[in-house]
Length: 239
Image (tube, rainbow, N blue to C red):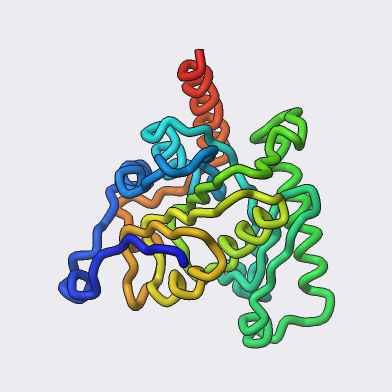
């Protein structure tokens, strides 16, 4: 059974849920909450793009390597901001669909297949941009203990796609680490992962962005810069 680190219900009702200055601040707080000493072979994996600044702070403060798990949301017809599914990078791209949401938005025939192909093309573009000519084996973490980081969870479609892809990869364990997520969502995820660390778990949550003072968009250039810096620091630590 996964464990959830979160504020008490009384604190949330009193309006004391933490507001993070920015993603870097959230990452520093997450690093303090994580216990990794018992994990034999841990690695931090971020969901880009917003999860990368958070995960960078976690990885650096815990002295762990950083990698990405590229997930692309499939938006509802006419409402692209509302995720009804997700596609995740991997040896065999994994697709997760929220069937309830798909029914609610009356998804027309062929829509999901078309969007899947569109998002796979975007994943391929981002993979080239972020990793260059890396071999796929460099991002195969079979047997490792994965700490999967994002800047928050809304409806859970992207994080679930990531979980399924990591299970297919054959990782040893999965710990979800996020600054904020709805309490009910965390409870629904507990059976799917080995551990959950979440700093704020409100009963009702309108948007992840409302929990941040600065929620400026993380760009592709930001992701590339942080990956390069993480690799540089990792080489420094191992030499």
